[in-house]
Image (cartoon, rainbow, N blue to C red; front, side):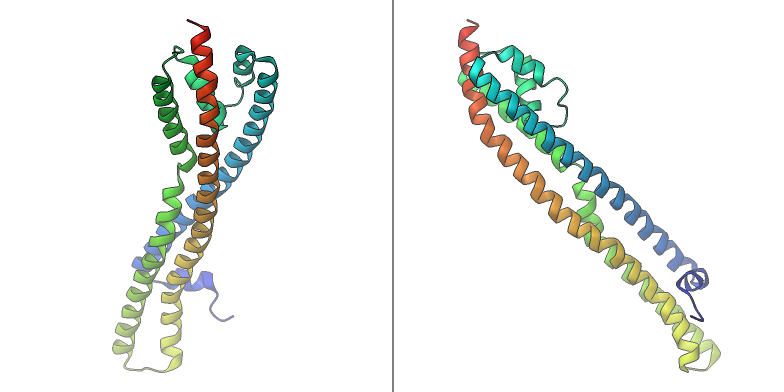
Length: 215
């Protein structure tokens, strides 16, 4: 190619270059979040499975202290974190008080699960428009160049238009993975939140019984 993408970027104006740098920032951070959340959710699901196995053992032995010990290394599982947080509070036999604690820690875990997803949503919704701004600005400069040159041939117009369109392409390249990842991870987080809320009904009975036994 006579004009490679890299050469076109180097030839672009300062505003278009600044737009591309902003878009690259969004893209790099988005990919970092994508890889982080993939690892986070994978480990959280594995830890939740470990906790559920320990809980099945608890149902057979009724040893809640042993169940608590089994959760000490499960730092990412939302259901394990809710159990451990409520257990470490002073156990009460008041069902409403236990329910309040469960709801409080469920909210905290939900925030953890959805952390950083807003950045992906912001990237998906704003980067195409940032790229479009760079394109419009580049096209304006191209037309100014055409006016100064007094010629509107394809050889004069094409390089400037190509430079401008790169900003839109970079904007879309940043937005598309972010939107896909946001929708996917949001569905994963919502599923884990629903599972946590459902399991909390069982934990309510567990803690109510434990509170009565400690009276």
